[in-house]
Length: 191
Picture 1 (cartoon, helix red, strand yellow):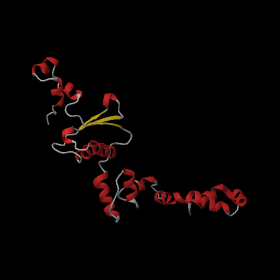
Picture 2 (cartoon, helix red, strand yellow; picture 1 turned 90 degrees about the vertical axis):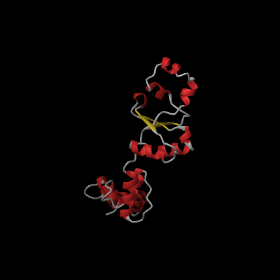
Picture 3 (cartoon, helix red, strand yellow; picture 1 turned 60 degrees about the horizontal axis):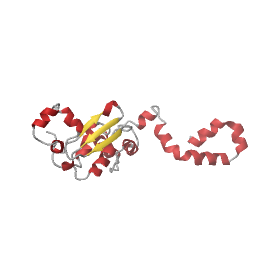
Picture 4 (cartoon, rainbow, N blue to C red; picture 1 turned 135 degrees about the vertical axis):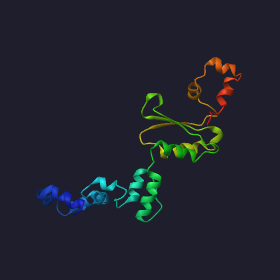
């Protein structure tokens, strides 16, 4: 039974009789595009079966929902691609790996969650000498970041203010190094 048939049955014989044969055509036009989703979720488990990678009849659809485009045409190949690339999506490891794929050198990526105590802000820093294309890095991060989080991204020449503060040295200790503030700021952090 199609969605259009079910909708017409719910309208009852009074409305169906008054509307005539055009009602079925209208319902088919309105509900026809939703038929594949209805088929996908019509089983005993409903939406759970659509989101179970091992049992879904359309792994490519699930991959698209996870942000993973699949190349393979066979179902098992699609499942394997999603497992390989989609299982870490939204996790810090995926965020770091996405950024590192665009970097050179030591490929340092610093991720700070809950920036200024805000649970929806995340900050990612790579360093200019290791970041040949900061816009490519930003795009890679946006594709890998968890949904709903606001991303701040920067590729400074050297240390950030937060890093300098977190080193725990006093102003007197910094002054004793004989380096200017600008010199200290342009140094890359260890590691």
